Length: 316
Image (cartoon, rainbow, N blue to C red; front, side, top):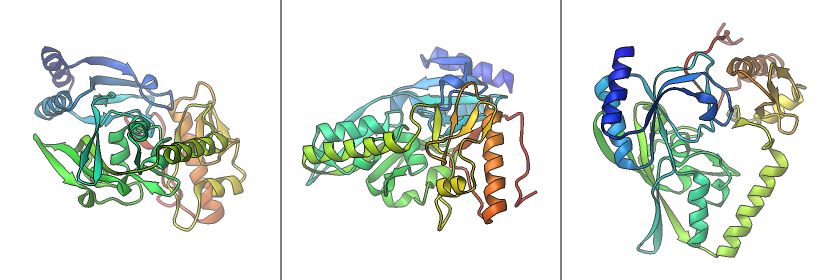
């Protein structure tokens, strides 16, 4: 595997694709912790991303796509393959009939896409404006907030898989709660996304975005590194309320802590190792299951090699 990775790195450099070895995952994720990524390629446009992915498929090395790293925890043992990190790239808005299509490269921040919508007087992305992820990551997990999701406004995406790029219409994404065709087929990559928006009142759009931002500042621990809501919403419950009712606010393992501000968040309160976070995730899952019989499923994705793991109560 090492020879394949070194050969892939050489080919990428020959084609002008920026690539680094043993990159620190703490600088790549919003949790600000994690072991080394063996090979990191950084891309900022569709053509370069497609070429990087094609080379990785030819090399037959394990790979993952990473945007803003806002929903990922990398293990202390690092990731042994290639991570393709998408950086901010092309973003545009063009009128098509009575609607306007906003197109964004996968690495563009969702908040920046929402800001362009505001600049153009386009409604539909207000509730998504505070989500700290990239466009690609948002499509991948059907990100949402305040009752709205990416699936509500996505018209199509450009994907890459096994040497081919194809456009996937919105209804064919198999969207569900934090689910999509991209999660079902992890080898498939989001290259860019198109959002169909409608003209709106800029002042009303701005006011809604400001209100959502205010609500986030009030309710969420934005002052600490985290990956946002750690758990998916269990059917019939709210994860944060279950955790709070179980008396787990402020529970701490190493540098990882269940937020005292919002129990649905686990924060890096200072020097947290990835394994501290994972141990705390498992402790919360065990406690909530023991008290209420509810299985909390992580929304955060675990990437790479962890130096700790344990069985859960329902599958031990």
